[in-house]
Amino acid sequence: MEREPGTQPPLCKSDDDPDAVWGVPMKACITPYSDQQHKAKGTGLAPWPARLTTPPPRLADFGYSAEMFEKDTANLGSFAAALKSKDVWVMNVVPEDGPNTLKIIYDRGLMGSVWNPTRPTHELDLLHGWTVFSDIAKKDCSAVDLLIEMDRILRPTGFIIIRDHPSVVEFVKKHMSALHWEAVATGEAEENEQGGDELVFIVQKKNVANKQKFQCH
Image 1 (cartoon, rainbow, N blue to C red):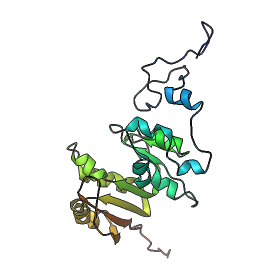
Image 2: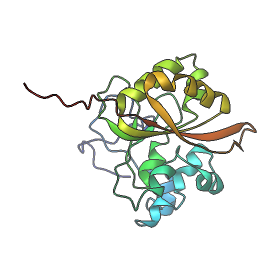
Image 3: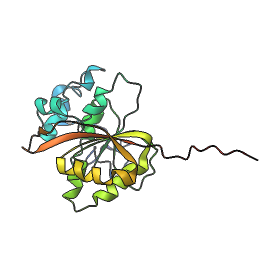
Image 4: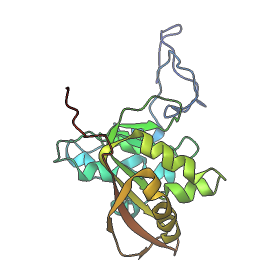
């Protein structure tokens, strides 16, 4: 891209990551087109709504294939895409220390954010976690703290869909009584891409609000 010297705002530096959204200062600069965009003479994205289900060109940035995209459940926004005909609002949340798949989510025309536990969160009707518990176990983080945080941001009568190893599901079951959660459904264990077993476990948060009516005398 050729520009007159001194043109404002300037182009961003070549080592700037335009998709970095966590812990980076905002800069008044323009991101140049990538080599892929130059070759395609554009983004190469399908028009809406086909964009939701069409593998975007930037899959190659992660080494993902179209087949992996089609088998995705949530990491690339497929859970939200599957609800496109529903009158719901879905926020895709990615971990700050994992692959920044937000650019794939954005390319699909979906919303997304990086998880920030210090940010105030409105009560949600549904939480969907795919191997979230297994991932935090690798970091020596507290699974109990995660359960408490999920309960905090989940609205009474809201649902949680957990897709994880059977041992994780058994762990969650042990704490359901204290959290006032109840089991709704449990799927059959299926083999994942790593050769281990995963199953889907759905729970609902009870409404424990005091419904007793008081009468004035």
